[in-house]
Image (cartoon, rainbow, N blue to C red; front, side):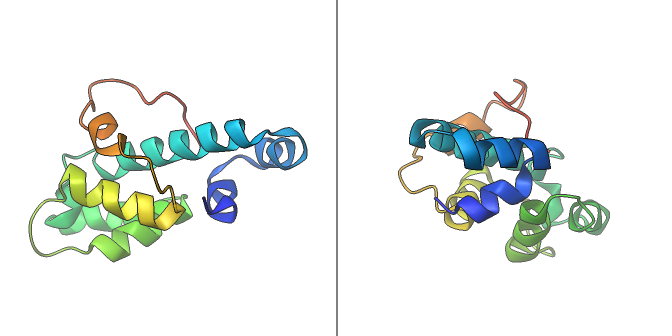
Length: 118
């Protein structure tokens, strides 16, 4: 997992605490929660960031470095982003190798994310 990228998504106080006290299990759970939260944000308009310029522009202006970067990577001008496309981009960006259930977790957009990372 890319800890620097996960830390960039956390509130500063939480990042400081995580660096000082977190166990490997807590890091893994936090990385997955961040990935789910970012996926929900990217898919919040049913993947319209992929084909609607206003949605794409809104995501490019996000406070989240991951949302901004992944919005650029996924691009705009073609089709809506799919859950599998977004999940693959998140796994690569955060280096969440082995998080095979991410796509399934993103399919449950009617459910709130398990954790909200800023």
